[in-house]
Image 1 (spheres, one colour):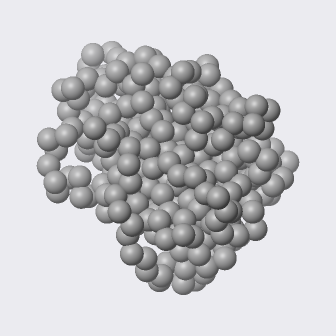
Image 2 (spheres, rainbow, N blue to C red):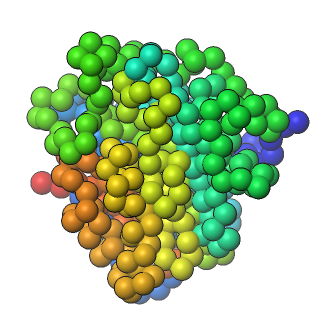
Length: 349
């Protein structure tokens, strides 16, 4: 049967809108609101960045990719769509873009293969779905959505998850679909040294020569109905051990959503985020201590994560957005019903 979550005709209609850009965002893209916005969305494409001297064409390529993904989410929400539809559509689009370490363009593991993780969660019911270590699923985020909507489970892994994709009518592809020269070059470099990219606590070196040392894609959104949602997808660390699972598909770690606090999507070195229970820790600071979104996110990123290990995007029930990171930059974007539409890569100097 055909999986119905992404309805091509509806999505195509939603993508026809236009929007003028607001001034360039600051380092973190944080905002506060005295009123509840009708909708808001933030996206990320990983907390590792290209070299500063990669050139304007390379930078423009990434900014255009972020603009395209953010426009998709903006248009879904502006047309009255739900937050969960928006974050799935954004992440699905980024999975199809070989610039990002998710779906096509995913990192290689030690054996020269690709294993993909993804998760999605909604804030009203706190239902979630996730998949881990899948090899042949073109869009893991859509399979995660199916797990959430159509099964009694929250996390499916490996072969069982891939077989579920057939039940759902979700496209499966051969491993070479995920190949990109950039990821292969990175893998050959790491594999030859017997290392794993972005090891725990590593501060990004000034001479890093390849893009996306810690790549993941994600989106968080608030819709007109007052519901938040989060989605995250990744190819993981380059040269990781086969079967390794990071933070992205773990609810409360790399992905979380609760209307009582916020929706969170993380990017960075997964083991560090797992140790610090990052996504739920942010939500708990808000719900139990009454901290604002920005304070909670900043506290966790600045005091719990080792320098150079990643970043976070989050949205609360009023439409406030927070985009924080402790790396040289984070591919990111933010938009809301007040007219904001911004994308950026580097940290503010």
